[in-house]
Image (cartoon, rainbow, N blue to C red; front, side, top):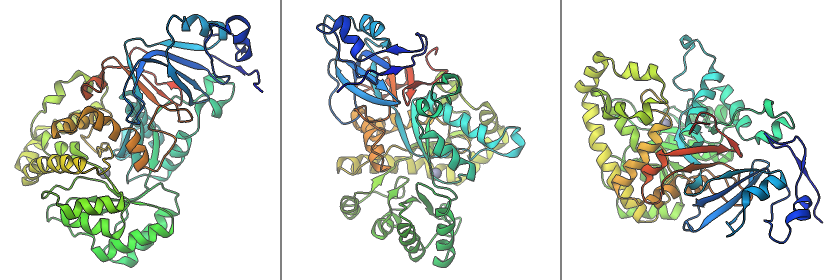
Amino acid sequence: MKEEKTVKTPGLPTRVAVGLAVCLGACDSGFPFDPAVDLVVYGARVWDGTGARVTQPAVVQIGGGRILAVSALPEDTDLAALAIEAGVAALEAEDWYLVPGLINTHGHVGGTWNPGLGVEYGEYAFNELERYARFGVTTVASLGGDRELSFALRDASWGDAGEAAGDAADARPPPRARLLVAGPVVTGFTPEVAVAKVDAAAAMGPDWIKIRVDDNLGATRKMSPETYAAVIARAGEHGLPVASHLFYHEDAKGLLRAGTGMVAHSIRDEAVDDETIGLFRETGVCYVPTLTREVSTYAYGDRPDFFDDPFLMSDVDSAQVVTVSDPERQARVRASGAAEAYGRALEVAQANLARLSEAGVPIAFGTDSGPLGRFQGYFEHMEMELMAEAGLTAEQILRSATGVAADCLGRDDIGTVEPGRRADFVIVRGNPLEDVANLREIVGVWVGGVRVEGVGGS
Ligand SMILES: [Zn+2]
């Protein structure tokens, strides 16, 4: 039994009958709108994030913040007229491509905030989430350094905008990237100390526990295998997976054996071997390349070429550009041996990415953007281009940044454009399956079915 529903559609009479009302005038030649629909996007070629090919132009129905239906665009049907008749907002997207919103499984939100900036932490973090969204990144897992307020921002980001505000369209929060958080990074050099920090972090209600197993090229002490094993076991008791920062191949093996839930950076010291590939296969753990992290360690010894890229410069935290452009800072970067070492590390990382991808290891898109000079939104596009340079196909990269990323984060409500999923998607002008750089030509971004402001003239 179909119920007649009323919806509020911006720009149309406040209460419009849809559903049965459609059939009164156009049942035979009409289009089967879902009774809950409040936006129809038609004519775009949809790549849905599952690996299915882009085929003919489609109709995507959205309602209540979710994807309701995806179907082929019927020939000889005036969708616009039928939508008007049905009181449904419609967007014609002919010649364009619709893909799921990008998911960054390793970013940082709010980490560059300080009280001297003259803006509240919450507003600062909101601005960052809005910028991610304007670049097409609709979910970010912030892996460490998250303050208590970020947990509330996280919770708010998973409410459907339409639900949260009821009829008061003006009261809806502006759409921004959804957030997952890890809380403070768990540190400590003995199991006792580190386990106590796991308990403290777990009490905040994070999505992940984040640890660092790294000596920063020999400069600092590294968490021992005994300690990280205790951390991973304790996190498991709290039902929490552990995302591991690492650099060295040997540590990756140890962490995989100890039960880490995610390898949150590339292995950057040497080529991965069959044993490591076997460990990834046995555990099903996802591998997060964060190639742009390396770029950020050496690029600012001079003025980087990408400072001439209008795609970055039209939407950037200019204070950060000023900071990394300081000649004295540039000289320090040039003088640092670390910069050169991380430059080599990028080449190793790209080769390992190619090898692991080839071996079928799930590659979860992630950039480590957020810290100074790792420009949120823009670095995600640079990351995809570096993945392509490493030899991954555009489809592999897109899968990594959508459906695979969602799986790696344990979420079945994002990452694909399928009925029931959250309506987080991006419309671009060119075919991203031919070249991921086509994702730069953004027409619009939607989070929970609501269009993000400040993109493509919206
Ligand atoms: Zn990080």
